[in-house]
Length: 489
Image (spheres, helix red, strand yellow):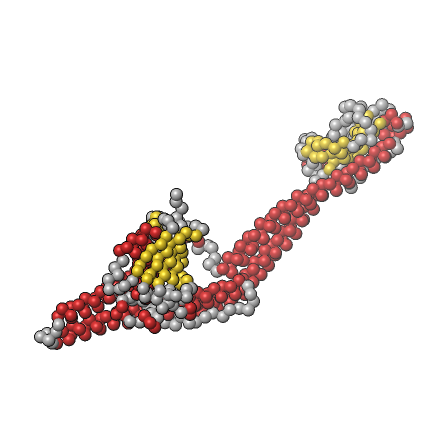
């Protein structure tokens, strides 16, 4: 047991549950991002609104002071304070500043230097902490740093009566402070966060449920395909799944499964035919061999033993050739790649085969024609077996001559084996490459051949990334091998 198996138990096995969980997780990430953006945007907009209101309040207080009117101490609006030089207490205050008792000593600093009147200043200021006002600070401003809007009033513009009404000297400096509190923005943001949280949870649950049932409905054809595929057995591989008419991915899946089942069915049928043909081919020489030996043993005195031994040897050689071909086909069917990156010169191989091929008892001319070396990658034994099978087939059917030609064509090596025999009908151009296939004029097994030579040759050509086809000819048969040319000097 690995270390990750206990943790996998918590992960749902159902595709529906996994999809619902993945959709909910993705939605949660998206909603979290949206919530974070909305939270900060609402807080920023709320702060802007509070600053606008504070700015309006600053100018309203300034207008009252310019008119010589002391601003009324009101509980509504933002906290404000009007301070003046040469005065210990505040000229006016309100909006929560009364909790600090500014009438005795102003909270915010008096102007230390004259600034241009009617100019709005925005800066952060810290509200000082007093020992005697902590219990009365309803807004909890003491010790905090807040954005403060301020503007200065030119007391020189005021008349003596107006300055006296304000309780300041004629040359005093006046300053109006309005504190921007984040409480409103925080309250709006908190309310928005609660609404978004509830809506997000409901949305997550809804999306998970919808995803679960949507996948459940979408997987119904897959379940039907699974049930039908499970019923396919080696004895009856003809079962096919129903292809939905919707045209979506499941249709492609069903079509692919049916195609795969059809290939398996064809492969099984081909395997059965191959076994039956192999048994039939093996039975013929075995029957002849057994019959000749039984007759010889039954009549030993009248048996021509050299002739009987010759017959037995001939049939044994046929059995050996057939067995070797069957073993080679079995190895080729494993689809193992061609051995090694060896370089083989097809021109030299074909020339050597034409020179050394035994033509005893046949008045045939076997020639090889080429324009130069033809290097290819692959196994020399495999190429020799391929060429020998083609030459064996051509010699078996030729009347007077067999021609081997090697040429180079645009990065390919093309080798042809042409005989002047009866040829192959056009309708049998592909059938001759099937296993155990003999055409009507070549069915005599006494001439040699197992019906596997061309099938083996084509499989060897495919293993070397090449092709083997029957080229159309008016006289005789011409087999055309085409393989990639190896790069060389």
